[in-house]
Length: 193
Image (cartoon, rainbow, N blue to C red):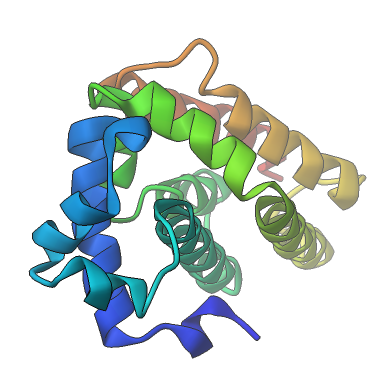
């Protein structure tokens, strides 16, 4: 069952509030009390929806990854110039400018570290889903003569590895946006038939 199928409006409200609290205080200093206050509810009411701040964080991360994957799926069903398609794929990793919070926020490093240790299995599953979608796009576009791609599987892995490599060293949000644009141009031009 996908996360979208089990989300409630109350959970979404709590998650939005928690995101703000995590960004302001960091993961370690965030408490269920702070999340409850930001969400406009009592702490006991919050516990009806989430057992711990780790559960809230996991919900946030899983919701984010699910949205990213769905947005990328939507991008890759269409044809278009490879540079534009790849830029749209990379942009899908930043819904509503969430990367700005993680890259430029005072506690961004801590949140990214917690994220990497909290959602590994789910993130791996989503990463595999995205690589499959990219591979299918590459195969379809190559078959139709829109791009040149001898090995769609290896190319999809290379695209994803290159994208995830943009975070080292950790850039500012402005640098991240500039790097994604440059990467989309380099990879897209390389694929252009």
